[in-house]
Amino acid sequence: MEIMDDLKPEIARLFAAKEQRRRKLAALSFPEKVRAVVRLQEMAAPVLRQRGCNVRVWTLAPPTVAAK
Amino acid sequence: MERTLQVLNELERDGVLGRYAIGGAMGATFYVEPLLTFDLDVFVVLPETAAGLLTLAPLYEALKARGHAEEGECVNIAGTPVQFLPAYNPLLEEALREARETLYEQTPTRVLRAEHLLAICLQTGREKDRQRVRVFREQAELNRDYLSAVLSRHGLETQWKSWTT
Image (tube, rainbow over the protein chains, first blue to last red):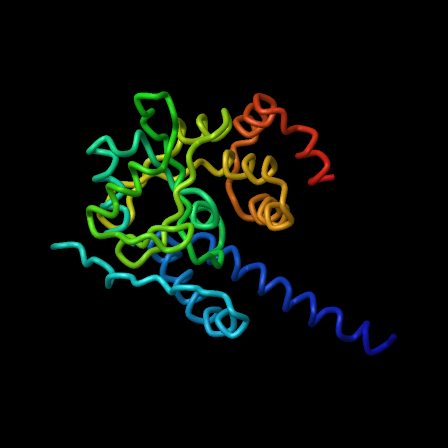
């Protein structure tokens, strides 16, 4: 029980950091989020394909650079 | 993705679609953290056929003529599998009417409002919709008055209460 009590502040800090990261991700621009989704697809696709799911990772054009 | 949206805009301009807006996981991603999805859910108002029917066939034909192939339930438009979902009930019709205009890179597009996406989750009622409602409540900036009005108009207040209390 003592070990659990010692762990609690550390776990709480980890959860708080996780929550903060999720909020930061939620605040990204839409194109940045789409790029993040494609990175998620790249990570998930091999696992899903092994399970027999037919998934396609999206192809994105490089981000447009605004003309000066 | 940008080219995909340009194609959707062309279809709308040419009258193949009445109106479109992004929904589903990508619509939700507009408001919350990025969510894993492999298809782009696009809600559409379809022009009625002469017989008064709503069918996706003319849309699929128009896409095929532009070189975009069907892939199962989706159409591959410029590397993105797009699933078209006709607005089949008053909630979806309203959601499409009131979808917000935005830009993706340089291309104009529309995304369903967060309050409508949440209401659609309540109406659909799957486990993943319940999880999405939780994420919306934690991360999205919701207009509470607007949400209440949507839930009331579409008879979703009981579901909202049961999922949030």
